[in-house]
Amino acid sequence: MKFMDLQRIYGAAGHELRTLLLSIDLSTFDGAKAEEIKHKAKRIVTYLNGVSGRWTRQTTKVAYEKAAEKAKAQLWKLGRRIPRGIMPARSGPGVVEATADTALLKATGSIMRTVEQFVSAALMGTVVAKGIIGAVQEFDYEDVEAEIADLAARAVKQELSSGTLKKQIMDRLRQLVGDENFIQIGERMYNLGAYARMVARTTIREAQTQATLDLCARYENDLVEVSYHGTDCDICLEYEGNTYSLSGNDPNFPILDEQPPFHPNCKHDILPTSEAEIRVREREG
Ligand SMILES: [Zn+2]
Image (cartoon, rainbow, N blue to C red; front, side, top):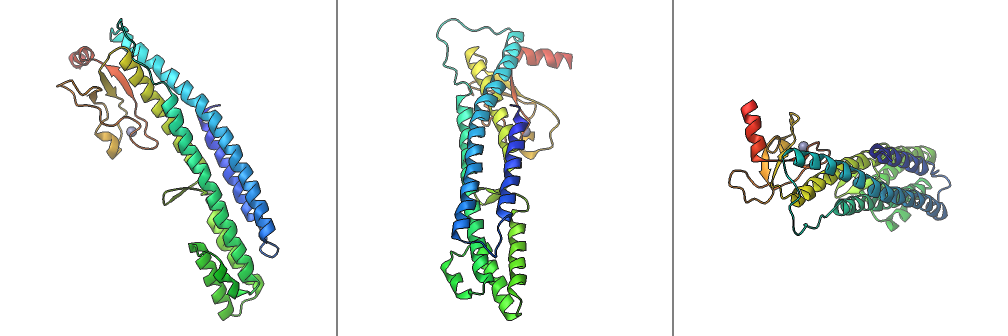
């Protein structure tokens, strides 16, 4: 499974969820149908959780091994060999895998909350469209529900038909799922595909960094260089192309206080380097 696949699978799931929610017909919607919708949404979420777990295990491992090969080749070029004696425990891709799993599970967990809010708003829409305005009070007032109550109140004042009100409510609900932003992290809503892409990229970068750190520990190499690609990102400018000491014990180089990725979708990584190599490069200009 390639890393872009996660984005595709999440994107397709977002589309499916949107279609599912927009299949709601306010004329016939009721508690039983609401449960049915939630049940179907739950199945999509369960499927995503399964895919995510498989994706994380495979991708972190592959990204880690690839970066480890690259770091090892660089360490050999620097003349480093594994010292005799006790070998430091390598942490491996496990930590990165766990972080990615947590991020994805948290995201898919939030999808059901979004679905429930939508369904609850639709139920309320059904009730107000029937003209039973008094029953509105039973609902928990989320922002959208307050808006629907508003639409209903205005409909009464303007003597709109129940059909027109239903259409207005459905338009508002359709707007709500237009971007397929079903994932909520903190205060922000995310599109499923975009969120998956962000987690995928971050996970791969984290696996790369972890591999380089593990190899540096094993070869007892202290200096690393942050990659250079002419970034215009404020966060990364501070680090790009610079050399850092992992231990913080080298008086000539600052400690690497943050590790790439420095932010979501960051393209930076680190590679082992040495003072000798830096001198050679300076001589060559
Ligand atoms: Zn960056």
